[in-house]
Image (cartoon, rainbow, N blue to C red; front, side):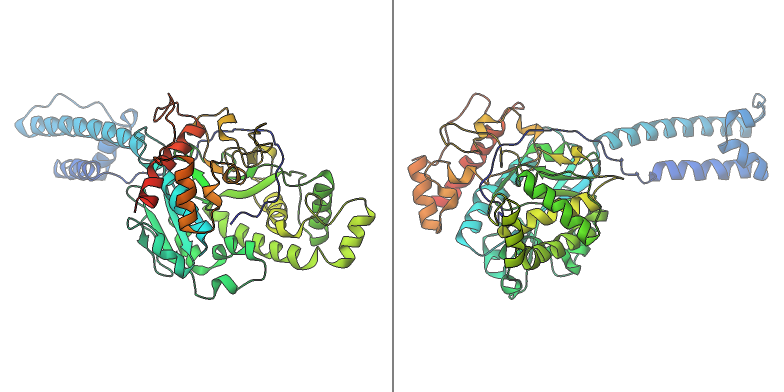
Length: 451
């Protein structure tokens, strides 16, 4: 679930990225052509030298005389045919490289067995992924979805999602897919800090097995919208963290002091939210450090003695100065600065493509952030919207309902036909962030509430 306290406005930075292209296997046609060329050279009596000339660069081979007999004429025709095959194969290979996604990515979430989380997953999280992968506009990346669900919550995962057993690895090829894995019955009671449950599954050996199939992995809360930007962008510096307000100047200075006390490098970069998008090669180390730091903050950095020290310095052990319930945010700040740099963590790695509008998109009507109509960006330019503030203001607040019945009643009071008002950019390539979100709800609400 979300771990943030009341938000404040933050600036927007929208980088772009191009990751390395995956290496393609050599085609059977090319391999067969090379083998036939070598066998023909050997059959002509050329030996090793003739093979080297046949497959080597032209400037290393002597000029061939005009063929003088049927055997030589046949060999020339064969070589000419093979050249055409190789040219055709090269063109086909280049075309396939243009069509093949550059990388396979995974979005993961922990699905808690509460009515609120179940409603948000069914209304927004999974439907937005489905809408994103069904977008007819081509993208550079294949994006899978996976829910790690508390056992009693797994029943709401859609039938299209494949269950993975512990230590099972997803198929790294083919179209985008949805998966889920059951967490142990004891998972929800495994730690005293409940917000830590949204992270702890990422330290298991089963998660490590899953991560082997991917180049990048994003962790998101379930109260989020996945947008087409995910098909067009991965972090250009290898990893990124969501941008937004996370405390005061006192908070940030104290975080740097804690990092120094614990022996971690800190580059003075702050203002991060709960979503992160990390190279798969780093995700295990980063997740482990994040969980350990979250537990450290929760257990050690808000003692009565430390809170007295905070008060003496003119701040408070409360939001937004020094707040125990956002221990995971403080852990993210230190872990990102220490581990995610390539080589040094930079401001460009704190991206408004993630946690978009969580602590920005201010509305005078709401007197708060999260007003998606205020976002100046197209859906294709944003990877994920965190509904941290939005869910408290939208319509009759159905996204915060505590039961399924309350959810549907409030949704019908918001839009009697369970259809959001259509805008001019509805379903277009230039669709706004807000329109994309409303289109998701217009598809999901009737499925949830038309019994």
